[in-house]
Structures are given as C-alpha cells and as structure tokens.
Image 1 (cartoon, one colour):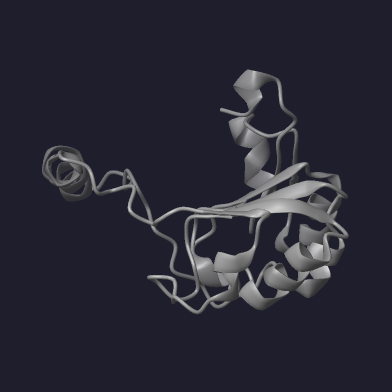
Image 2: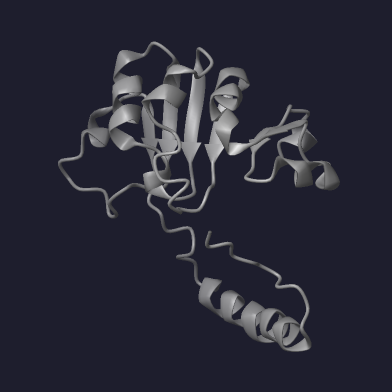
Amino acid sequence: LAKAYGMKVVAVRRRPDVADEEGLVDACYGPDKVNDLMAVSDYVVCAAPLTPSTKGMISTKELAAAKHGSVVINVGRGAVIDEDALIDALRSGKRLRGAALDVFTTEPLPEDSPLWTLDNLLLSPHNADQTADFLNKAVAQFVDESMPAFLRGDKPLNPVDVT
C-alpha cells in the first residue's frame, strides 16, 4: 500500500534475496541490518512474528540508530520490540517523534504500564478480528480454500514459518 502512495519501501527479511522476486520493496536488508533500516525510515512498521530470533529485535541499539523524527508502529507481536527500550526512547525524544502500538508484551496491557502515560504514543486494542463476520470469513477461508489446497498438495495459502 505504501508503494501505491509513492513511498519508498525498505524491508528486513530473513532472506532478503527473495524480495527482488516480488518487486514490492525498493531495498531489502537481512536481519543483521535492522539498524540500517531504522536509520533511513520515517516510519518503521513492525509486523514480524514472535520467534526466538525476533524477540527483542528492536531494542536500545536499534532505537538509537533510528532516523530523527521517525515513528515506530508495531502490529505484529509485542515482544518483538523491547518495551522498556521503547519507553526510554519515547521519553527522551532524541530520535523518535512517536510510536503506535497495537500489540504489547503483556496483553491486555496492565493498568500500571508506563506506556499509558506517554503523550507521544498511540495505543490501540489488539482486536482487529472482533468484527461481526470475522469468524465466519476465517472458517470459510479455511474450509473452502486452505484445506482443499493442502489436500491437493498445493503450497499453503498462508504458510507459517516457525523457525
């Protein structure tokens, strides 16, 4: 979607070599180059799954490398971003202009979390699936598309990589 609005899109992937096949990004870095992505990004959208290699993937070092005035958005899994490091970065105001979190290390977010007190942080409940027809659509996709594809031996429609 960002490309459709003329934005430059930079990504981090475990296998950056496959990004060229898709043509969806202008540049793609490996996981060892998160700091490079942070340094050139106005907005960092984190949608990574939580795995041993992604836990704390964005922490003090990465936030210190962030472009001045940037915004961090997490819609993936809470523990991918070190919340304490994010809180410190938002409080200092040295690099980040702000952040938006739809996910947290602990959900629901505890009442005593310092995240509630930050003026430069947008919090949203992690409940995008709470719509009138989500469950019906999800089950229909599984029954009508995913399971038949699996039974035919086709590539899964929504593969999950647990490594």
